[in-house]
Image 1 (tube, rainbow, N blue to C red):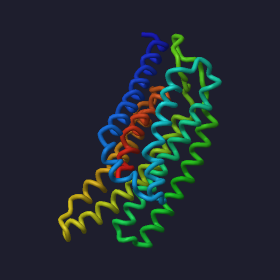
Image 2 (tube, one colour):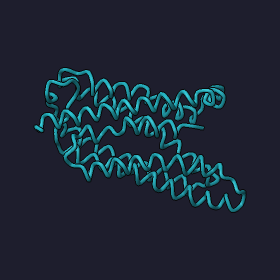
Image 3 (cartoon, rainbow, N blue to C red):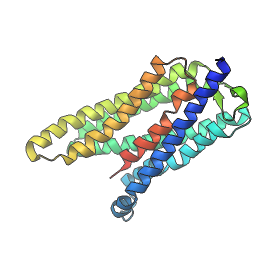
Image 4 (cartoon, rainbow, N blue to C red):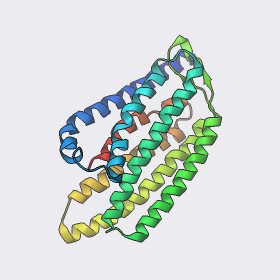
Length: 249
């Protein structure tokens, strides 16, 4: 089988992953819509609700744009602008979801000031690192026409593939710290109150996002022959699963 055919098949697989992400996103919204209306729609517009709205609804903009990126463009000139829009929407939604988890962890620790300062410092460091990594990756991106006259954007092999793994590593680091803090405090609460709601609403949410970050790291490091966009979007599926879960009240 020729390289062009193999690449075209892999790009088609990427499109299936992205459609799966959109399906998961729509399914999640449908099954949780009544609970969302009951628990969130009548609440005042405060900081936490803004975070919820961003984490919950931005994927409905990001995922279709990314689907268009993979399915529609006939010219490589439109690929980078589409990528940048989808990437910024993903960044904003992810930051909102991570802030939501940060606040949840802080409240779980009884509004402990030291925990809040530590988490904010870690978050700022991770954001700064992600910005540096993103800038390096963006400068190294190149696009070629997709093989066999197929549609969509085809990001060729560049340094961006190897650099971008650090974005997921930084995300996983932050989530691992949140997970450990949550587990420690959860065990403390279970001994005192036997409340398993904390396990469900704390550990499960963080584990979901951490697992997706780790999966992306594994794919980046162990499958170097995959096209960059095949690696990168897994995250249409990540967005479809993890941001809605993180945003649930």
